[in-house]
Amino acid sequence: MKSLIRILGIPIDLGQKKRGVDMGPGAIRYAGLSSRLQKLGYHVEDRGNIHVPVRESVKEADLLDTIHQACERVYQSAKELTAEDGSISIFLGGDHSTAIGTIGGLTHNSARGVIWVDAHGDFNTLDNSPSGNVHGMALSSLLGMGSKKLVNIGRPGAKLNPDDTVLIAIRELDPAEKTCLKQSGVKVYTMRDIDEQGMKMVAQSALKHLVHMPEIHVSLDMDSLDPSIAPGVGTPVPGGITYREAQLLMEMIADTERCRSLDIVEINPLIDHQNQTAKSAVDLAGSLFGQRII
Image (tube, rainbow, N blue to C red; front, side):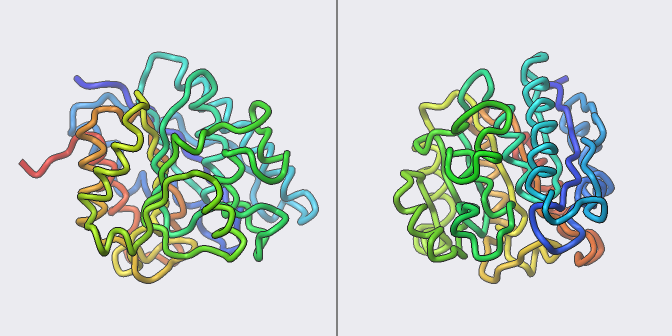
C-alpha cells in the first residue's frame, strides 16, 4: 500500500460571479477520484467538505469578509492535514480563491514549491482588478500583494516566495496584472512558450527552477486546458493546453516523487458536457500520483 491520500472539498463560489463552481467537489467525486487513487495502491480518506456559506446568504458588502473567513477555515484544515502524518492532500474546489487557504496552510511550517497551472495569472489586486473577482487575486495574495484581508489569512504576510513559484499555460492577463507579474520574479510559461518549446521542455525547465524545493504543490485550474477538452470551467479561454500536454506535465511532475499536494479548481458542472471536465481532472490526478501507460 502506498501513502495515505486525504481529500477535502471546498465548495466556494464567492470569488467570482458565474454560478456553479461550488458543485465542483461533488462532480470530481462522482467522476471516480477515490476509486482511481485506490486502484493505484493508495489508501484514501475523504474528509468531506469545508463549510462555505451559500452565495444567497451573503450580502455584497460582506463578500470579502466571508471569503476571508472561509479561507481561514481552509488554512487551518490544510495546516492540520500536513501536520498529521505526512500524507498527501488533495483539495477540491470551488473557485481558485480556495488556494489562498490551501497553500497558506500547507506552508505553515515549511516552504513548498508551487506549480500554478492556469489560463490566467490570478495576479490582480482589489486596487487594479477590472472585475473585482477574488479568484483572480489568489496568487498575488499568497505573494503578499493586495488586500490585507487576503494576504494575512492564517498568518501575517506572504506565504510564497516568487523564486518558489511557477506559472504554466498562461494566456489571458489584464493590463495591470501583466505589469505586476513581470515585476514579481515569478517564473512564467505562457502558451506561446508551450507552442514554441513543447510541453516537455517547459516542464523540464519548470522543475529545474524548483529543484531546490523538497516538496511541490500543484494548483490545477481546469481552465488551463483548452475548452474543447474542459468545457465546464468558470472562465474558459480558447487556445489552452491539450489533454496529452496536460498529462505529460503531470507525469513529469510525478517522476520527481516530490508532489505532496494538489488543488483541483474551477470546475463548473452546470456548463459541462456529461461531466467531461471532472473526468479529465480525475485522469490528471491519476497521472500526477503514479498512473502510467505501461
